[in-house]
Length: 117
Length: 117
Image (tube, rainbow over all chains, first blue to last red; front, side, top):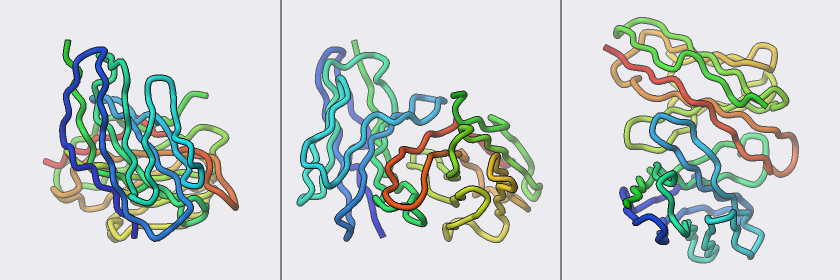
């Protein structure tokens, strides 16, 4: 079974600064997807960024980028130019690449990000 | 695209009562997932449908839990004889999918928060 570990329960960053959230995972599979989801307080889970394991290039989405280290099974999220609206719970998640019964997401325990002025 | 809709947003009930939640996925999505999220934790997979077929159930889904997706559109999750430990946020997600790579991301609803008195 796959596991996802987020070792930082809380992080804080000043507005306009950069912050990196850590995630490690364990799997015996070679083909999979990794995700970062954002969950603002009392609001729905939103997909931030996605990485396909067979792609060596790190994914980027505007101010969000990842550092994917497949051999180390590490998948960190970097938020640049942090904004007040980035404050939320961030979840790292894993999913097998092939459909059918492998479609479920396995989540970490989350990192609460605070953004200060 | 109206997003994934869940009803009700909040449910408060006494221990021992039955409750039912509804999820309406994004209209063209054939896959539907239920997750449970307890305070301070990441969502945990409960069950998954492709069209009307329930293809996977987690061990978390005890005999008191039942989920249906009768016409491959909306889904219901029923909990019978509720217990204190059932208090959680119940999240629904949907995606497009079929055979082959599970490429499409899951889109989440706002969730139903269940409180057991």
